[in-house]
Image (cartoon, one colour):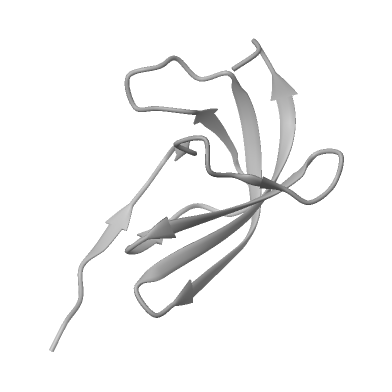
Length: 80
């Protein structure tokens, strides 16, 4: 028995990220996703929009049918 998993090289928030601190955020995504840790990744609000900055994922948690990302915004190139 298996399950579906997706590998991602960018963070797409769909405007659902929760601010935890000045530069710290949490994002819960449906399904199981794998992301590289400790690597600057482009971050954007929607697939069709250009990235507005770079973020580093510090923690990934898998739960029942969802993935929780904890990340730090490290650079901002435009206002989203």
